[in-house]
Length: 532
Image (cartoon, rainbow, N blue to C red; front, side, top):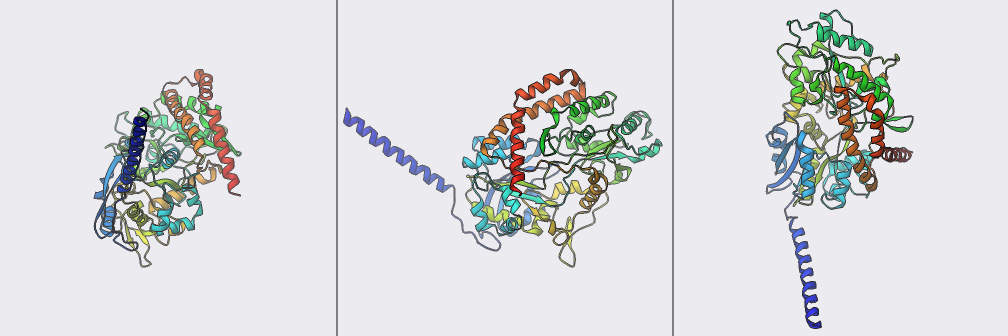
């Protein structure tokens, strides 16, 4: 009996060793041998195919139909099989892939949360990239040497780099929401540009009731927006009540203290006030459900029907042919006669533009391929569009914008010809490598003219939290954000915030809001201390 047990133990041990060896062999087989050129192009002499997953903009084709992607394949001899997922469904599908292990070779424009990066970096789903960058990414390495802050931003708390950066140092994200108003309708009705919140209200009432488009129908939409979208949202108007709300995180900083807008009395007052606008029919109720395609269509109806709207810029919603009918609504005085806009927490830096997974058989080739995108001239084209379509070179070799046909909106064209994703265009590249596109110059000027004098200085920075903090944030914040999003829409549409406010605040406490704010406060204090 003892001998039998001994034999069984030996067989089991040998079996485990054999399985372990087979696993190691399987792991090694995922990295296929390929002859790669260490410098210059093409990257490989014999074509290599890689599988990338990427979200795409609503108007974008399959990326292999884009001229810039075709040029990259011709230059590098690397073919990309793209799984382009519409932006609205990308996060869900990305999460399923990561959880199931059904992985692409890389995620392009990955849009990972910090929790994704830490979790899937530490469990081996995403591979560390710092050595690959040093050995195979000279363009990116130059960027990280020029901007140590970018390297710090993409370095996880465990010291590894799992994702690559995106940066456009343009100064355009301080306020992502421009409110536009139909100045032709103002002239038709003999009205002045509103300067206060109440004057704006009265103008919207006139737009609704006095037939400013002159077609004899009550088809005017006084105000439309996109609820809780990153741009085109309604958050700037909450600043009129002293609470600079933001759709993504709802955090703002006041005198060094992190506050949660949806827990403030001013937020309650704003919801109650703007519910009155909904009841009066001044706010388009489809604002709470529409996507960008439906939203843009409202600016391009046969008869002009859009009185006021919110977006990154005027032209993209209403089209070039109607852009002159609209003007930027100035920052409005609040009920106390003050003007204030909370600065956006959006950053010109992103740390999740590209990630290589453990399924990738050619990580070195992949790093060399993506490094082509960090060459300054290529970064500009990948971000905005290719030479010949968007740019031409001037006598100094700088990329300058070609004149577009009158019926072409740059924002829409950019979606069709530029994949975006892992690029870096530094402040010093503008005016030397690439001329800032006209609409960006105009947007920067508009920010300076209309918004900058009233923009608050304190904002919540990008902070890479520890795995333990991220775990707590993920457990608490997801549920709170969904709860707040639903209650906000419910109260704006149906009212009732005054009666439910105390119960709502108690629920936020029970869901862990005090702990969440403590984590964010500690992170802000660490961040400020590290800057010294």
